Length: 452
Ligand code: PHE
Image 1 (tube, helix red, strand yellow):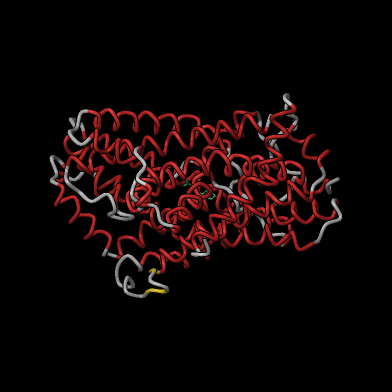
Image 2: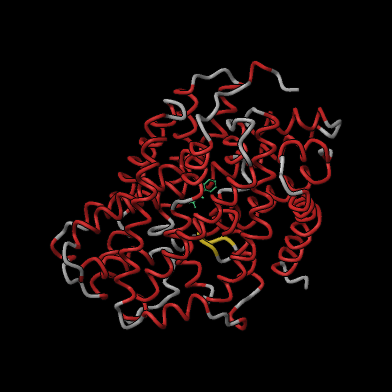
């Protein structure tokens, strides 16, 4: 079915795929973005909508995206094209792949800026001023950092260089091994932080904020943000999971692997929330502080702990690695396309894509300081890019994937690819991608536009 020239390498095992896919899923989206969005959007009701979106829209679409990748076995653009041709459908489907490449570019540009913040905090946590730091000092410290573009450019550049260095070597064995230890280590660190949070006076309030829904706080835009966050956090709708699926050996169960990845991703996000909100309430801070939330709150917890400088640095090292495994997934669709279609070497493809993303990232970087007043529709450049990619382009890409897998591909192909033991599970998946997910997404889009 596919042109054999394009057949990629394959993962060594199911575990390798699960690790890579969770590496792509678990990142800044869970630790940095989920808590601050939850804080800005009023807590429990937002979390509930987010969880529903993960389960009813995210998981079935993740299965669909993975199966398209394994069926096509090429970069997302070529996969969509060749699958559309085989199904005698329009060649326009390849633009799903193109949109994915564009979203991944735009996301990586600001992702690298925030990952640079995490890198900077690895060193900062060792500064003596963090011992027993007061909430006011933690806030002021972050503000000084946020408004100093020069320092941020250095970290943004270093992060991009690290991404290019790894991606240019291919889906590196070292990284595969690294992820195996670093992801569990991150989980342990988060559990330690939650342990600290349990002992704090704001724990009850933090848990209530996260899990008690107050629907009066939920606007149409919050619902859209929750859905966008589900896509962003799972790493869906832009082709990375499709690329990873294309490396997946035939015998591996797509359903079981993707459910596991989605569960791990959700667990990490909830743990991050459970670690952060008790600190927010114990110190009488504002949950809706915005993108600086983890940088303003976690140092307070580390500062109060014995060995806090060490654990604080270690935590940000782990966040840095989590961001790195996601940034690799973000750049991979472009690199795969440049090597397949433009004949570039992996090194050149990675360097060029990285450079373009780096340049774009400068705009977001400045929107935290000198360009903060430059706004479009009330959003600064970072907020605008984030809104366009996470809330619009990723769900739109996911919707196209669902429609393609549910309506364009024939039933036999998807059934064969998913190979589910239980016929009822296959029917449930098919119902979700054909009807439930597209309808749910349509309603959310309309609601956000104020249509209903
Ligand atoms: N899922 C990643 C995170 O949560 C970000 C990402 C988005 C990765 C889209 C790949 C694709 O940080």
